[in-house]
Image 1 (tube, rainbow, N blue to C red):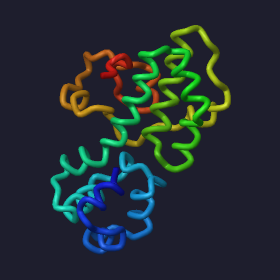
Image 2: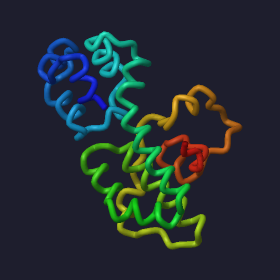
Image 3: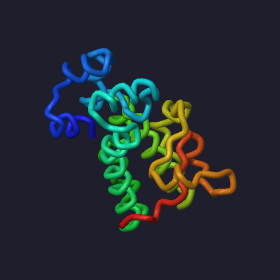
Image 4: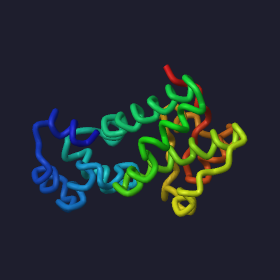
Length: 175
């Protein structure tokens, strides 16, 4: 998470904004989770990485760790029980709360998971999220570094995820 990274680097939002040349309001939104770092342009990400004395890869690994933890939680719920995973997503308002905060990768990932599990188990889609089903991430999003490194057209990505430009292969890889 970007906030944790700033603490470890002993830098505040204002200093990061000045050092990177990225506007304070945008940096503030990224740090506070009101905008999703996954939707951040590559040039902006480079500026932030340089300001934090990191390579672009190191920057993404640092800030995406929070997404990997999020993904892992959902996968553990699925491993426990698909029905419980559905209930977990719905009861914790994971979809709406993330999308409203600008965390589109998390919100759409949860929505894709919900849709996939509903379809797989013969349940109707939850209509409360119909407005979000027209959204999609601007850039291809690979939930894991391995998925990005080994991406190719022959892989079997889950259609419910591809709809949102998320390249997910499996949901049963919880460790």
